[in-house]
Amino acid sequence: MEDYAQAAHFAQTWGLLYFVLIFLGVLAYAMWPRNRKKFDEAANVPLRED
Image (tube, rainbow, N blue to C red):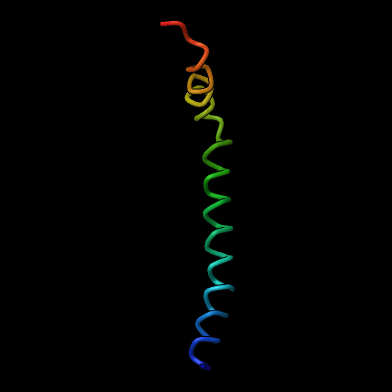
């Protein structure tokens, strides 16, 4: 039972850190000025009448 508690504690601690780092990476990618044009074009796709 002790192994499970240690594994759960490890997953909760480092898993949270891992997902926070992934979230910050995605946020930085989305907010990077170089990507603005790409996201603006993607936002306008539903409004196009091709």
